[in-house]
Length: 253
Length: 294
Image 1 (cartoon, each protein chain N blue to C red):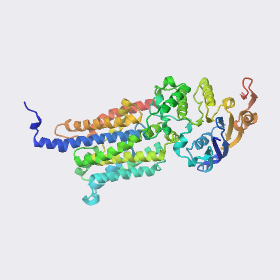
Image 2 (image 1 turned 90 degrees about the horizontal axis):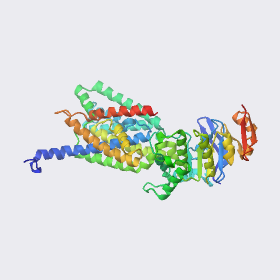
Image 3 (image 1 turned 90 degrees about the vertical axis):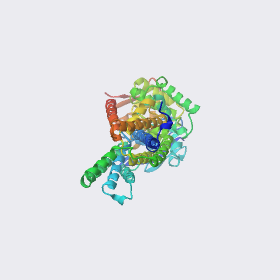
Image 4 (image 1 turned 135 degrees about the vertical axis):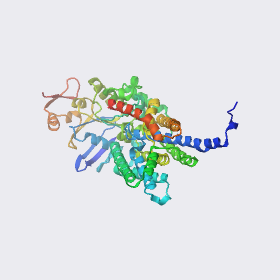
């Protein structure tokens, strides 16, 4: 078992944002997190990354409660990229990606060949190698998004947590990012809005509504016409795609 | 032919050794300390207009100073510097309290600093206008604008220890400061203890700034301008930015001090006037660029 959540509850003031969520992510698989705006996706991801403490319930990494694991050991294996992460300092792409080696380096250790390999690999996989000396402020929205993914990969994670990583990407880069993440030998938990991408690439899906899990399982079981209507409030037809063995959602006009 | 070392009179020797050299070396450490504090504030608060006094330290120091000079607190046993230092730390703790300790975000810290500055500046003005006579008001004004006039070797000893210690620890935090580039959450997910790092860095800069302000007054603009100049020269990574800020700040301050002595013959300008005359045009330029970028 990789990341596992048991009965998580998280409130802000009197508002219950996460209301008793339990699930287990399968090692090496891609878990899609779906749900309408405000259903608790981002909050759940923050809890999983250890950035917030749930009021009750627990999160375990390979069976160990993350409250008993230090910040740095968590950072050495869990990479989390927020949805709107940005910086006002004008760093080069290469420097931005190098920052993510932080958890693997001690205060006095130099830059190692392993650090170098991780950074180079991350830049190549995300197609940012040619732009590694470009300044952050000069990048397009899509290039920033790909640099964010490169940051996460440079952290050499076992668990990759991404909050809507396909935002701002054109369709080519959306598909190649989803392909890339699904081909990585890591456990990934990824919040998505595009139901068809979720159907095509994710191994399992969890659907949230008002802080609760309303459906979970393989895409074929989860993505039904009833679910799309009840949770997302749209009429749709769901059929098995003639081009791949996964479901495809046709939205009504 | 003339100017050999032998012809240095005892008076010249004393002037150079006891006055000029100690004064220049104090300026070196004050410039370095203010510039590095400014660079750290700009990074931690993610705001290019942040500077060492953003947490109300200069306002607090001025209140402390007038309490000693005008109100006569401490009955002559407490020096102006000690009063200013106490005032600076009072303001810092006020800001820490108002911004919810280390958990408050950057915006909240900045707002708390603004509130503290307003409060302590109002207290200073109240004391100066109600209790002070014209000469005292002039003295306080002159002190606030900064001067290296009174510093000798004891001041050098203090400032070199405090700033030397502060700079060393800040350099050890260079990578942590880089990790804050994408915000507190991103730093936390890289394994940084965000609260602990904020507390350490704010306390270090407060200690350096309060020591400098209580010694030579609230010299403005060095902490704002120099980090930007250094960033322009060596880029935003702190391993290079912090030493570059320290060196640039040191050189700038020594030159500003010399300018303050020679610009008008027979008269010493407050050093804050000289730094501001250079600083304000530069500040306007940054402001203009910042507005265009956002």
